[in-house]
Length: 110
View 1 (spheres, rainbow, N blue to C red):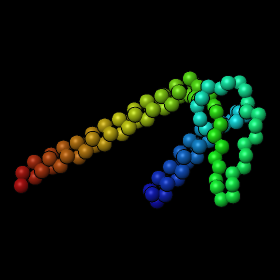
View 2 (cartoon, rainbow, N blue to C red; view 1 turned 45 degrees about the horizontal axis):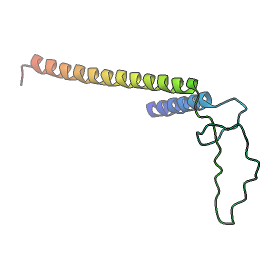
View 3 (cartoon, one colour; view 1 turned 180 degrees about the horizontal axis):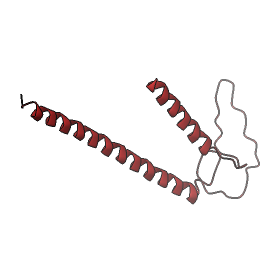
View 4 (tube, rainbow, N blue to C red; view 1 turned 60 degrees about the horizontal axis):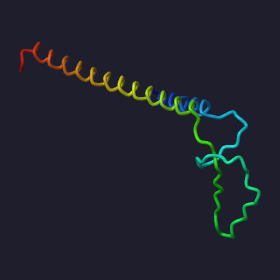
């Protein structure tokens, strides 16, 4: 039952991350970061020969300052959570070792 809860929680977190990351703007997404010249190419891209795959690469403006800041803050949050989890795990391990030593001394040391 615990494993099912973990799986459902991870699927829910993944679904939330997917929905939050969706872009709702009407602009066309493309690959490549080059400054735009303001001119659109007027020629039509020829079709590839039979048996070949063609991937069209377009020019974009790259991430905005808001996107960069959002990524930076997300990285900081991820690092903070990772540090808290690590510290909690180490504290719990130390606590268990302390209890083990304490119970060993209460039983007379042997």
